[in-house]
Each structure stands twice: as structure tokens, then as C-alpha cells.
Image 1 (cartoon, one colour):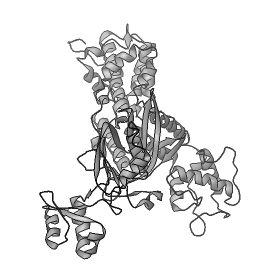
Image 2 (cartoon, helix red, strand yellow):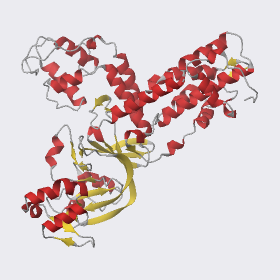
Image 3 (cartoon, one colour):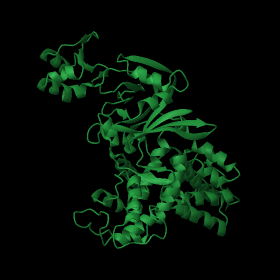
Image 4 (cartoon, one colour):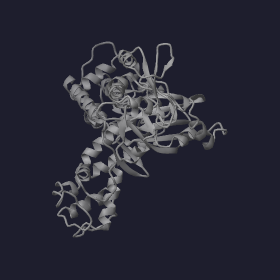
Length: 521
């Protein structure tokens, strides 16, 4: 760039391009990339097309001044060639806009800690937009190379396609008006007539829950029920075919709202660490599901899927973070967290002394010695923090008979539970923050699969010994506690409740940041 003052061309005096130009001043990498002899290169036109298409990636074209840059490039192509200062300024504006686009596409638009996600720093955090842009310019297909900065996980590509589909539904007549009130007892059951059946049929067809060409019927028949069951299953509802308040509320969510939900899921993926090792375990908290993944020959496959129970939505959220699993503890002790001891266990023991023996509790003093007699002094010591409560291994132990340990400052782990009936619920936020797993034997087999001696029979035997025993994993396995209210399974979208409000907070943060950028222009 020239050191002498230059005039900012009038074509750049809008929508924040002055700020882009100033940001690029003094950066040698910005000069001479997109203008040749005062005329835009083919790469310049492709760059404006990619920026204009940022919405397809769940981003906002306005954030990159896509419209104004496209007009400036078109003007430079069709009108008089730009002189050096003006050409350099347009080149700088395009380059800076692409740097911002690439950074947003690759690593996201916010620091995940803003929505209480404590993920470790990834190698991707060191992403260099300038270096990436330089490499993209040398690639055979520049526009494709730019778009390839997006997260390279299969779910992202599925969400991108899903976003495009839901945007096509935005003006669908099936959502032109709201559905009428439900009949009778506010439930639509088999055989009932309802004024909303034609509109319901159209929505289910548009969403792919009923085949194309399905026609409405006078009463709620078997065909419609099957469509409703498919819809319910995709929206984490009891798939009973009965349209009640919960099902109706989900059916009233407009496609534009779903599209926004999909963009938030894409944003989550940009900074959730999902490519750490050949094997890894991922818990999607709002889905209440754990998946164990393997990567072989560059192909990611799901080796294991199971239901889980996570922290309560009201008070004891399961935090979002990633840490390597290092230990498995068979027949574990449960060291009652101080907050649970103070707020729940000690008050219960003061009311019901028999609970102490029934549940296999004991006290542990400052020297690590177990004390098995219940007294008010010992309870007071727990309240004061000079003693702690723990539960011995056994059939009533809150951790069940196995614990998967990935050391972290929140003291969160995966574990079995004696309360297995809760896994049958559609919504499973019942814990104090730790994650209860439905099939601990299968998970242990996945974790220990490199050692053929650990057969399912041996795992069950170790779980049932009643004596605490810990083994160290020879190769730690990454565990990621993630949050996505939209996923694609078997080619079909599935939506989940924003149980902790993380999507709402992310949406608010993105909108607030966008407003701040507009005000700064």
C-alpha cells in the first residue's frame, strides 16, 4: 500500500467499507489480489458471489458488505478502469471482507465462553484467514476452496442442505394461518373430525412425514396418524399419534424459526471439537443421547448409540466441555458433592436416620478414615466442610457399578445408575449434572476394545465385585459434552428443546453483536 494519503472513492462510502479499507491499510497481503489493471479479476467476481451466498452457510451477507462489494466490482468491470489508489482500496476491502468471512465460517462468530461452553483451544483456533485465502487463490476452483473452510464434519453438510430446504418452506401456504383449536378435550384422537385436517395434511407432506400426494380425509385416519407419529418422533415427543398441546405447539413452529434453529446448530459446530482422535465419545445434551465414534480410513462411523440422563434444566445443568477419559472405576464409591450433601442429604439424614444405613453412607474425616456411625456432630462436620459423606459400593449406589472418569474441574463423569426406569422417558434431565448411561457394559467394551481380555462377561464381573477397583486407560479417549438442538439422522431432521437456553443465549449474542457492528459503521 502507498504511504501517501489517498482519497476514498465514493463507491466505497457505504455499509462499513471505509472500516474494511482502513483495517487493511498497511497489510502488504491485501494489495493486488483482485484487481488487474484497474479491472476486477475472475477471482473478484467469485469472491462477491461467495459473500452474497453467505446465508447458505448460516451467516449474514450484510456482515461482509456483500451487496456493496458486488456493486463496486460490477462498476469497476463495466465502467472506467480504476486508478491505482481506488483499485488498491477496493482490493483491500474485498480481502478484508473475505478474511472476516473465512474466520466466521471456520471458527464461528463468537467466543463459545459467551454461552458458557468451556471447550479447549483447538488447532482450528489458530486458523489464519490470510494464509487460507492465499492458498484458495492458488486452487483450481477459488469459490469452492473458500467454501471448504466450513467445518468438515458430516453433520455440518447435512445441516447446510437442511437450511436450504427449510428456507424454501418459508412461504409455503400450509403455514399461511395457524391451525384451529383442537376438538373436544383439546386432543385429536383416531376417528375424530377436525377443521384443521386439510392444513395438517399439507404440513406433514411438506415436512416429509407423509408421502407426496396424500389427500386430507374427513376424520383423523390411520394414514394421518402415521404421519403424526413420524413428526413426533423427529421432535422428541411421545410417538403416540395423538395430537395434544405439545405436538400442536411443535407443528406451529414456522419454517423460518426452524431455519434460525438450524443456523444456531451450524454455529455450535464451528467451535465444538469433533475431530480430535480416531475414537471419541460425544454426548449431545439436549438430545439426551451418547454416541461413540470411530474414524477409519478417513471415514467417520457411529460405533455405539445410547440414551443418557443429564443435569436438570432448572438448576443443575450439565456443563459443556471436552476432556480425555483416563480411568474406569468399577464398583465406585460415590463421594457426595458438598452442595448436594448440604442441601439434600444431611437434611434427609436429620429427618430419617435409617436412611444412612439403608443407602450405605459413611463419613470420611480429614485423614481419609471412614467413620460408619451416624451422629449430629458428624452431620455438623459435613455442613462445616471438615468431614464428607460418601456412599459405599453396592446396589443402591447412586453411580451404579461403574464410573467413567475424564478429570475436569466440574467433577462431571459418566456412570451407571440403579434408576434405570428413567431412560424410557422422552425428556431425561434428572441428574445433578453428571451423565447417567443406559448401557454401561457396551460403553466399557468400546472404551476397552483394544484389550480383547475385557469381554462383556469380564466387565460385568468387575462391575459386580462390590469392591472399588480403578483401571487406567492405556490410550485416553476424548469425551465431548456438546449442545445441538438440531441434528440429521438417516437423512431426516430432528429437533430438540433448548433445555438450558443455550440457543436463546447464542441467538441474543449474535443479534447483539450484529447490531453493534451496524452502529459502528
